[in-house]
Length: 149
Image: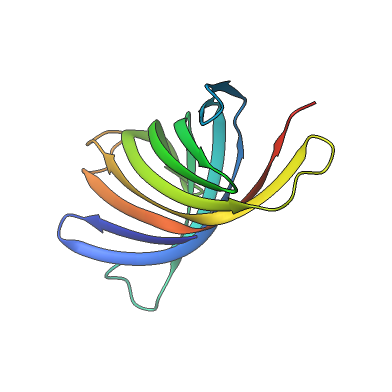
């Protein structure tokens, strides 16, 4: 995942990943509502510091995803309350995420359906946790599977 952050007029970037567990409920054969937990993290370049330093960010979230299915393709619309803390500063900042994604699934094998896709999201963090207001754009490759036991 690629991350870009803007805080108090300065921009920085980095990369990372996330793990999600999203149980879901299907409606009408073409729509699924997914609700669950996510924990992500990554390293970003600390802006305006010489020599260059990295800061480790952590991003817990509670995503709500509405997934639309079209044969082997799916399209996601997501909202989530999010939080942010750093390895060297455990105070939490709070915000919201709006995201979207697109994915394609492989052939189903006994209730197991692997998929891969792309996602992009915007996160707005309010001034909290001793940090100023911040904006993140995070996106990249997503891989997962749907399980229907």
